[in-house]
Length: 302
Ligand SMILES: Nc1ncnc2c1ncn2[C@@H]1O[C@H](COP(=O)(O)OP(=O)(O)O)[C@@H](O)[C@H]1O
Ligand SMILES: O=P(O)(O)OC[C@H]1O[C@](O)(COP(=O)(O)O)[C@@H](O)[C@@H]1O
Image 1 (cartoon, rainbow, N blue to C red):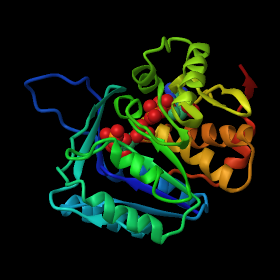
Image 2 (cartoon, rainbow, N blue to C red):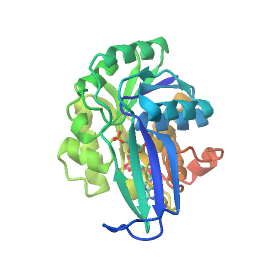
Image 3 (cartoon, protein in one colour):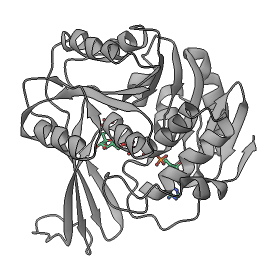
Image 4 (cartoon, rainbow, N blue to C red):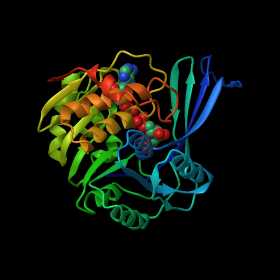
């Protein structure tokens, strides 16, 4: 069973325009939607949709926090959040004439004592894996993630920005940087797929058994004891890449939880993320024929 921890959840607002973004004028949206968001929460929704036992935890506050809790309960996601003062943030993705703009708030300031309350919630679920996903709100340091990694006999997976990744000092089963985050965390040249595989391989020495590097349209690399596995992205019509990394990671984790090997897990991750990027927002797409979709994914050793 997997517990997800989202220290800095978000209501994801996705707003779409036919015309290009321009300053000093009123832009009238063609469509807009609100979804429960934040990396760990996105993963919990996808894992639940794939029938992978999961509980979503993290910090919630204000009306946006209530929206997230209600949305997850409507989606049948089990939750065990810690309430905080302040208001959970609103992150906005504007898609204007096929160009994507992400406007993320920082989130409410929280005290370090919330980590104790959160650890209690995690321990109460007796998970075998814990995914810590997303940024940290003001008031928390990377130690808030290391304390989860050291907090029980579970495997900890982390998906966070490069600036936090490079500060982590615990033992982790996996980290999931995207290309930019891998470059930030390692200072390596990540302009080629091979360069990303080299950087991921080296980064394992910093306490990560495996590194799953998501490379956008170039697919993904999973580096670990099974070698340096590379999966090309599927050739699909992309609408919105927000949530793509969470989907890749969710596919990998759900496959591992079902006993699959790293190659099958990587195929599953690319298949799930390919479904997510074909629609706007971070709501759960149709995942019924993931087994068929993943057969279209080619994986090779680099
Ligand atoms: N333009 C694209 N075409 C096809 N697949 C994509 C595209 N962008 C993302 N994906 C899929 O989503 C996965 C994660 O994308 P990425 O953008 O790297 O994640 P993140 O959201 O963490 O930045 C990729 O490995 C790929 O499978
Ligand atoms: O696009 P990704 O990396 O999969 O993550 C998407 C999620 O990340 C967020 O952009 C938040 O990211 P941060 O927690 O790193 O600020 C959410 O708004 C969104 O739900």
